[in-house]
Image (cartoon, rainbow, N blue to C red):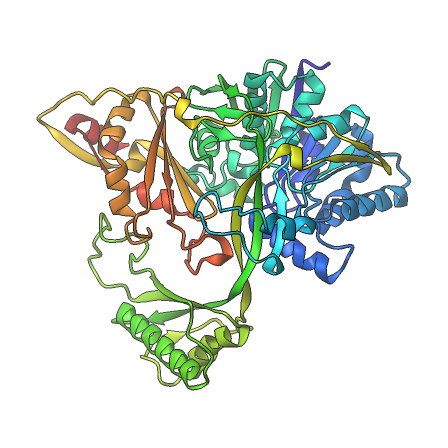
Length: 605
């Protein structure tokens, strides 16, 4: 067994740049390359591809962009490749990988994990009175379902490596499982090594989004602005006790510091004391993140508890069609002109639908970008002059594609009747696209049998035991102490005190805020409570939506979880930011009350 392994994170989503694999092979000295290609909406897209072509439904660019140009180097260096590129058809993906290996005259073993795809059991599940775990809505009509996939864990991947696999392909596994699987195999971790499993999961979580750990989407973007084109992909050096160091290949762009790693730790985790995965329930509240060298950050003190009894399952189903497009208005009264255009477009389209008995739109939305519409009314910086150029984003949903297309037709037909200043970039006209909604639930692991296909030899995999998770048993860390009282207080924008990163889980958004120094935490906590965040995002939140605030004393961080704030999320949303990616940026100019001497010092920096 190894003492330390190096794992390179080479893909964070389907469609990412193909530069990571050759970069990590050339300068990373890695033992493993791990690839995450999947998201909830990706599964529905792949399901449609499989329906159209039986051997489709996986990330084809894993074959064409990763394996085909790099297999010789992978084989020569003895690097293992672990990926969820299988999508909804891992066996087809594995067959394509074996064909490419054979074409290049190599001897690499490919293993496939099978069992996550529950779509063939749609009618069975539909009859079980299953409710969505977040909204409580009923199970979708079985005929409308595009995909149903259980989120598998790391032990099946480790089993494939134990058998001698060089390439392991899964369907829907949790993003961090490919990294944890390598750790389990290399270090012999057992199902009850909860702290180690949590640490390995955190290592996987850090690198699962590729360069988001090395300066991508970083609050201090100016530190990497000149090196984005050559940004380095992340590497974790994992030790047998689970402690790990984050770094990147030498002579690459980007940066690895406490801020980049802390932001990524908080990215899309929800409750940091109960980050639930198939193999372990993780607690990151006491995790320590420290700079250990140039572009080296050490991470320790992740804690774990027994895994849940069930797998999380995400289904996607079709719910009508949506359309949307963008256009600019330039000149004086730009905002008012854009608003008048949107009103006219909706009125014309709805009149047409009514006259032709086509039914109304189920939802409409427009946003005027450049007029502070993303900030609401709470703390938007007042403009000294009215905007002279804005972008109008206008969108709608309809049960039928033809009905959705009416809006586009009327937008185009208004071209000569519009307020002055309309301008568009010439190109293909937008067209209706299917709306894929997310339905999430849990299923007992015993009801999801898994198998391992090792180059055609199939074997059953053992059940990963779990227990019912008791959220009421959690004891949250005590809050930070109140700030030192002072009669001489000022205010600075949050970004002076903290880094921030935001993201989505279905219709929820999370915003992670990390203090740049421990002394700032009390001031941030005292000012930035649930009420302040709710007011800031009131224009996005549905009625009755909840906000929860969590404290992570180990990393001087706060995590906010905002329910029902993304308009349905993903392609079910008509928002300009349906995944909450900009929410941290909105919050980072929130004023935080601090002593005047601290404010003066920060403003001079």
